[in-house]
Amino acid sequence: MLYSEKVLDHFSNPRNVGEIEDADGVGEIGNAKCGDIMKMYLKIDDGIITDAKFKTFGCGAAVATSSMATELIKGKPIEDALKLTNSAVVEALDGLPAVKIHCSVLAEQAVRSALSDYYTRQGIDPLPIVGEIKEPEE
Ligand code: FES
Image 1: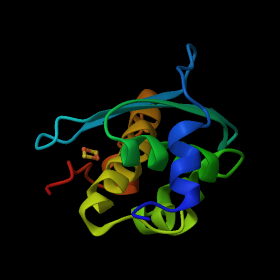
Image 2: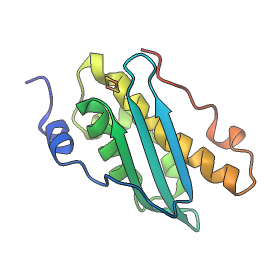
Image 3: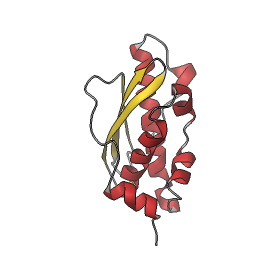
């Protein structure tokens, strides 16, 4: 089987799909090569990510990784979300085929992009905290 049970589960039954209307941070990231786009909404209270929702117009792995990414950051402090790497998302999904790793980078960068927006809205320069948001290159 190419995909793990967990990937298939998060693809067919993605968690946290949707939008947060009064989000404190919204991020969007696309991959120019495959054309997939991911949008991430975060609700943040007192440094804690109290809610996370996403919309992904993309492949199954992009849906599964964004679903898992929201699960991993919900209820966690911002610091933890900033440390969330695409490999942690892939690991939590019990792996992804090598050609699909870039999809997990989209999930990682979508979270960072939403955090970047959160800091900007607070009047704080996000660059030193979040770093540059990179479009996945493969
Ligand atoms: Fe584009 Fe997966 S193929 S994100």
